Image (tube, rainbow, N blue to C red; front, side, top):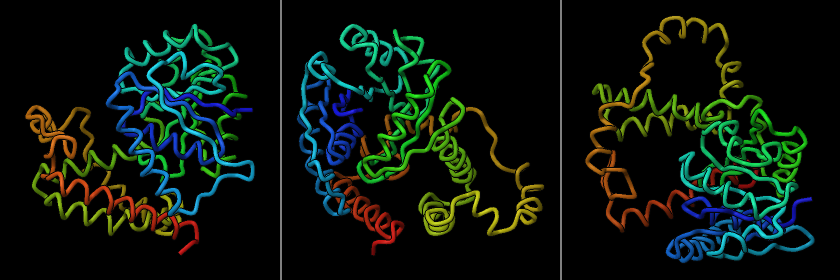
Length: 309
């Protein structure tokens, strides 16, 4: 049974993951190599806990867990039943983490990667016990969005998938088992297909960025939050889908490179909110307001989807 969890790498996801796991009654030790990341995580943890309160997510009868931060990776993984790797999306960086913890954990310890899309099979090549490695992909913000993808690599033991799936369910979250270890898994494959078409439409001058966001948020996004794509096919009618897709699929973007518009902006260090400019421009005041507004809306939507208004 999993009781103690180590999170390796804090970033933007770590504090929310730690808060949600602790709220589920688990003991969490979170590590980062950067003191500034640990300091920032302490503030973010408090914010995440406040959001969990607003969602009405209470600890189990056995009581809430705890979160402790450390800058010592050996301390973080000592006695851990599960280690969640949450470092940047770079195989070399992740491999370094696996080599570091290999000698610090026992063969029974489960190692999960929160990678957004690197195949788990590729990551398993860098760890001593690949049969105990699994993908555990959270969605951002992890303390609000309850769905978590569980992905087995080629060498993952089936019982490890079951353990992680059951852990996710036990703390009131929604596990989705991805049956094949494909790049991007499922959530990001669907998301990036949408983003590819969205960027292409803006780049070709079909629509302005603001109007595209309105179209998606209040059109398909509004529906898909309630009716998933497969159910939407049945609602619209497979005959209609067959008819429209017979001509529309051929006209959709199928580019396999990165759009010039995105390359131009990234080459100019316009990365989005983190740099103050991307598709839109942001002041520090606007960023703070957006973060609060989006969190409130996500909480409200989740409460409605769960039947709690």
